[in-house]
Amino acid sequence: MKIEQNISRLKYLLEIYKITVDELLIMISEGLKVPLRKSDIFGNEIKLSHLKRIDSIFNKGLHFYLDPKSPEISKDASIFFRKSEFGVDLNIGARKIVNQFEEFKISLSAIAKLAEVDFKRELPVYSIQQNPKIVAKQLRKEFYPEFNSKPKEFLRSFIGKLAEKNILVFEFVETWNKKDKANIDGFFLNPNVIVLKRQQNSFRREIFTLTHELGHYLLNEEEVEQLDIQNLASHKISAIERWCNDFAYYFLVGNYDNQIEEIDKAVGSNDYYFEIIESISKNTHLSKIAMFTRLLFQNKLSRKNYNFIKVDLEEKFRLKQEEEKKKKELEKLEGIKSGGATPKPIQSPLLISTIQTAFFEGVISEFDVCKTLNIKPDKIESFLQ
Image 1 (tube, rainbow, N blue to C red):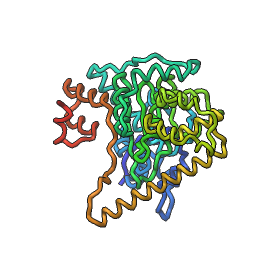
Image 2 (image 1 turned 60 degrees about the vertical axis):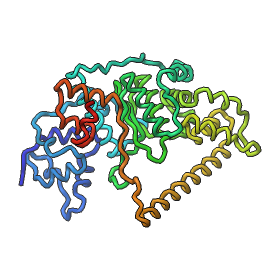
Image 3 (image 1 turned 180 degrees about the vertical axis):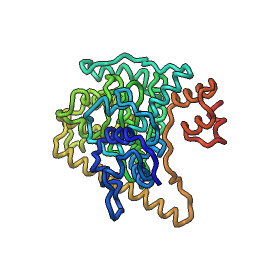
Image 4 (image 1 turned 120 degrees about the vertical axis):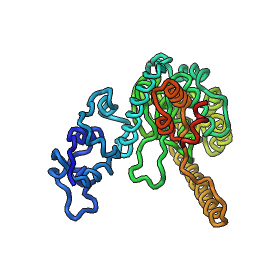
């Protein structure tokens, strides 16, 4: 069976995902005895089976390729048309995630406009010429939530604080069996969207990523990246990345930075000030490796000792993960149900309030509410109170 397609839409996807025709043909020919050719997919008509193979790569839904309207190739349509280079060589999984949230951002902005919800920026645009430590100290007064010893709850409160200033934060969750995992930790999309990868086993890393992306928001500099905590000690990263890293560190460490400043030299004889580092980590949600990396950057820790500490911390983390895995397996054998369901993304209060307003203004239906907030129809009343 053949159907008419809008070839411009396929070309649009190839440009977005930076995939060549030959690369696409290899992907969609997997498992076939006779590989598909360019003529098989670039005609005005295409076999439905071939189109389904194409959509198995892009997950846009068959209706996308049949729409006669040509997609908008403009800077407003996608960050991939606004920027050509990013902090990481984005794989197809990352590009799918970025494209998904770019489209969601555009859709939500349209809903907000119809519902007369104002998403205007409430903070000034900062410059890398401004001292990130001073900026962090100033903004802690507005954004730093009441401290919670549980990192996940602290993250939730932090997201809520940002919502008060019209900054939307979204999480995306990747299951263990996902084929194309995104090689990114987070990104900022102009004007007010921050997206984070759920770090179920390391909320401290996710908190740092959020604070780093808040730095990009403050500078109004879009970026998609995979954060390497060791870049805290790098002198080779860009001025923007250096500023965002410094801002994130000073924002999270707060007044505990005074204790870091008092450290002279972390060596074996003083146990690398491990007790102080561990105490600060518990009270700030900065990871221990992030603070040891800071000491390395300040020349208060040698590279050799840093590598020794890093390997030790990684091994302890690995053993902890193994213990938790064995515990779950034992509970399963004993018939104990574990809370092993797929984690649910934290939802920004700004998203919820916007959807509520749009519903009450008649802009969207109950179906749209359920779809946008990913809730079941029988739970809708609790979101509309």
